Length: 470
Image (cartoon, rainbow, N blue to C red; front, side, top):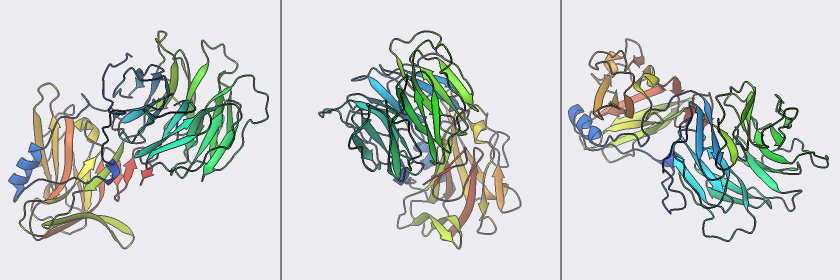
């Protein structure tokens, strides 16, 4: 997992931040979606449909890679298929950006300890209004995206949300320039301008440049996907690799237009980007160059951050007296068990999180493995709502179990359509996708839920990069 430490084409001027305004959302990972009243299929569709709203972000989220460049004044520039979810003039100079490890969003941190959140990134607190003895130097989010750390130039570490405090240096050589976490957030590394690396929690020490005579100061640190190594980079672009990190090259032998200010690992873990204060981006290894700023920004670029891979989670509805929806372990595998006990107002079901905002064609083939035997007429079914971006009209489709094929592996293509569900234009935007069981005295058991090329096998979050969060 990479956390760019000074660490995410035209600037998109939006105001999407709620950070430092005292508006905190409940933790996403703990959220379970409650379905509204329904006694039969038509009622379920009608009432669920009444809750569907257009995505908060206009347009769809392409599934491809990219990166963000952030200026000290808080402007965010996007490249590749990264999306800009907000940008604003901030209180204090921005010193770092951290991408939401999954879904779509990022945090900006300032030297004064303010944290601004955009898109899916939630606000878990900041140092706004507090006396900060030493300026903040960097930010890193946890692997769950439910918290983050701020690190100060003197090595003090502040933690918010589910980020745990693992320690801080007693003294530092030079000043701290950034922080990178281990894959499970059980530890972190702190790097200084003098090349020192301090490790805490389950972050293992792999080496540093302490004691070496550096021609240029260290400006950033990034960890490998496995957490068994890390890179540190100097302002001239000299890259030093430790542990299982591979040195793919640097810019120390090039004539740079401005100092290097940030580094971020690409999604494969086999390449990285370096950025200068003027927004020139250099790529190494497998990292693809998606572009640089063509004109000098009004304030220096302070970070480059990688757009994360798409991630999907299937979240069971909150249980009621009339239904039970939950992931249960049967022998060695997990099953989504949907039990409708009575004719009460709540159907059993689950919501697919992470697909809102995708284009319908980006869902690809959707499906699940039906473990309960023969389908109960139409149930269970996928309930999809999608919006025509041009008109704003929202369309509903039901993909019934019995029309998903003759085997236990049920499959549906929303673009081509299936029996009972007419084709949908691929450019329509997904507003919600649910798996529903509304029939009383019925228990449905399914596994291996497929959507957007990702197979969700249990209650955790699964990403297009092949990693599992949870």
